[in-house]
Image 1 (cartoon, helix red, strand yellow):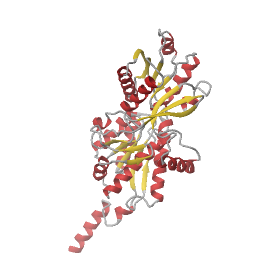
Image 2 (cartoon, helix red, strand yellow):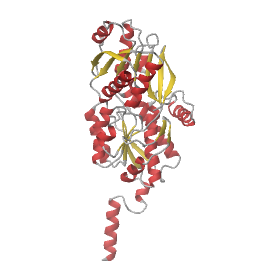
Image 3 (spheres, helix red, strand yellow):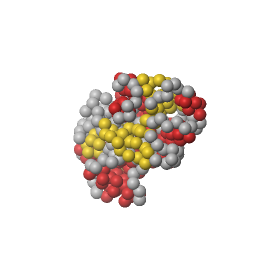
Image 4 (cartoon, helix red, strand yellow):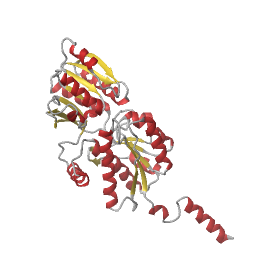
Length: 381
C-alpha cells in the first residue's frame, strides 16, 4: 500500500511538472508580445528581433539556471483585441514573465491580464509614466517616461533652437501621443515658450491638408511644430508638411525614431526634424558596441532604431531577475525586478529607484537632415 501511495504521489508530481529533475530540464517560457505587422511594426519588429537575439545569446551561454529560454511570440498585429488574445494565449501556455510592446495602448491591452495572473510584465518601449500605477506591482518599464522625453525635447527647442512659439499636433487616438503632447506643452510653457495653436488627427489618417492649411494661416508663423505621432503618421506628416513648402523645424518624441521619418518623405524632404529617444545611437559604451556587432552578425544589418536594443534590454532584465532570484517562479522574478539597481542595459543604466517605478535614464536628441539621423545632444533627468 505504501508503495502504491508513493507511486501515486510521484505521478501527481510528474503531472504538475514538479518531479525531481523534470522542471529543471524544461525551457523557461517567456511571452514576447509585439506588433510584427501593422502600423507599429517599424518599432515592434526591431524590438522582437532584439529580444530574440538576447534569448539566443543566453541559450548559447548555457541558459539561465541551467535551462534554456523559450520565447512565445504571437503577432499582435497592431490591434488591441489581438493583443489581449495573444496575452491570454501565452499565459495559458505557462509563461513565467512577459515582455513587449512599444506603445502604451497595446501594453494596456495585455499587461492587466498578466497582473491578474500574478505574472510580471516588462514593456520594452511603452513610455507613459503612469503605466506601473495603472497596471499594478507586476508591471515594469525598460524605457524612460514620456514626461522625461518631452521635457528633453522641449528643453532642446528652447535652449538650442531658440524656439519661443510652437504649434502642437496630437494623435488623439493613443495614450502615448496624448501624454507626449501634454508633457511637452507643460515644459515648453514652463521654459517661457508659448503654444500658439493646437490641432489633432487620428491613427490611420493619411491626409493632413486641413491641418497644414491651419498651420499656414497661423500668424505670426510659429518657430516650431511639435507633432505627436506613431511611426506611420510620423513619416506622412513630415512628407506632407514639407511638400506644402513649410520649412519650420518639426520636433517630436520617440514615435519618430523610425526609418519611416526618412523613407516616407525621402532624403530631399526629410530635413530639420528633431526628436527625443532612447540613448543608443552614437553612444560609445561597450554594451552598445557589443550589441551592434551581435545584431549585425545575426541579421546582417545594423539595428534599425533604439527599439531593437530595448527589446534586448527587456528580456535581459527578466533573465537578470531570474538569476538573482535563483528561481523561475513568477513571484520571485517580480520581487527581484523590483530590486533592480544599476543594471547595465544597452539603452542606459536601469534602476527602479523612483516611487513611480519609471527608471531615470539619459535621453538622446536626434536630428534628421537629408534623411540622415545624427545624435545632437544627451539630456539627463
